[in-house]
Image (cartoon, helix red, strand yellow):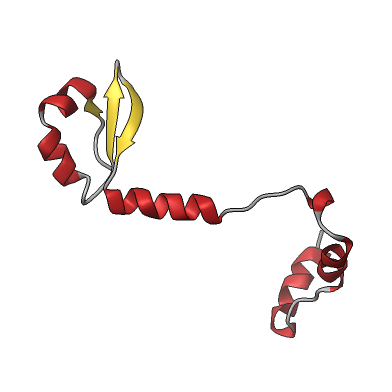
Length: 89
């Protein structure tokens, strides 16, 4: 990752950091603390797609059918060696 750039330097040389952001995220700092990152539009859109695709929920909210499906699921036999690791405990 790139070294943090002071906000005043970032402002004075925006064009330089705009080009750098096409290759990597540019951390911007203020008073020695990173306050944000300047990234390319492509990277930002990828982040937005990732964030929109993440779903989280409480397991208590699962429908009974899904709870049963999870409870009755079994790993493929080719992973049986992993069961032995659990049995060691």
